[in-house]
Length: 496
Ligand code: ADP
Image (cartoon, rainbow, N blue to C red; front, side, top):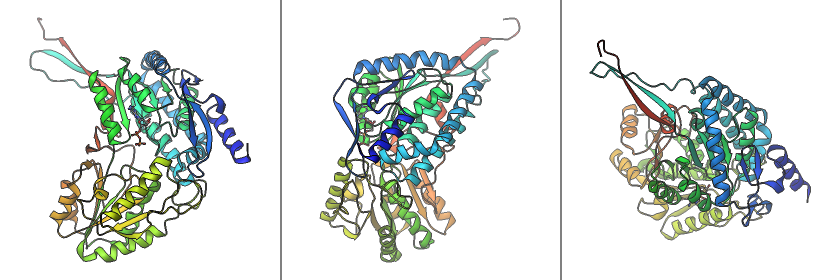
């Protein structure tokens, strides 16, 4: 074992447990799987960091049984005590922020800067939902017949949360925290490509005082776990973040029970730049919109719609700025972006760029050829002269690739933006306030920025429409997703 490999194993041991015991986290313990060995690959080198055994349906059912027992204890806590435990979990995340960020950067490929920001956001997510445990109220409803009618908001029971590899601990917390705040237990299934920070989070949850089984983690391949967990009557809801294709399969499996889903799927968001916009600001934001997290981001501004009058000039400046975007090792403090998380995605991005060029797009910067050397590094790429019928304009790349599409009028911009199966996010850049609001109202998206791109906070609703999924996974709005409403009646009129 070389030095960096032994450092990595020491990091895993301190945050999760012995690397040889990596598997699932049930109750308070690591449980190793019995299936084929799955490699955990370093995106910066392509080398295997460690291996862990795939899980089986028996482990999934045991994890759900443990969640069911944990949920009973957790729901019996007072709302205030639940809030204190979640706030404590946020403190513990802050205490371990630096090692958690390192583990996240090394295994996901995101830069250490981005990993630190996301770990800080994880602490903020728990702080935010800790405050909601005693504030999500029922109603008293003025029914006509002399009765008292009120509503109770009850936990669902056990929620299954399936999360992807692009922002592992952040998306875990984003979906776990509101479910826990409402008194549910969660079975978390992280991507098999990034299993470790979810385990670290579950371990911290125990330290924070959440009862055993309140947050369990199963690690292994998606289909085995998905089929077993969605088919088990203990599971009362599925929250899925990932590709549209897998989301459809999850949705279909849940419909058999039936239980409800919350789906956060793909995107092909339109970043619309009018010729009267602050073009310098729009250019800086367009680069971040396309390249943040090396483009592995469902809300990426991957379609850049630019008004004809400024198209050539603007696309050229975006090309120059994207060429300056520094891709480097995840632990390089100065890198803007890291490698792609995994080989399959790395190869897919190259195929998609080649396909765009075949379809007639012109290369402004970047291209198909990787920069060379080990690891899954790609060149951030800008393609111009794209029209919205090309596959490169319609399919999600999930990499640092932006297509620049020209438009003439406001109506054209809206029509192009909405001509997509996806409807997650979007932005409009203009100095005309009325136009900004008109466009914001007409673009089909769950999230729309005006003269900015990418800011998000756990306090505001997030989610998409159409093939981008359904449901809203943050803010107060998502608390409805994690509760069931009971309407209670009793007669109170005098003389009854
Ligand atoms: P990607 O973003 O790599 O395309 P997916 O959407 O397939 O990934 O994966 C997102 C998450 O869904 C991962 O945790 C993965 O293991 C899981 N998953 C994959 N297939 C299934 C399935 N059939 N049922 C449930 N979960 C799945």
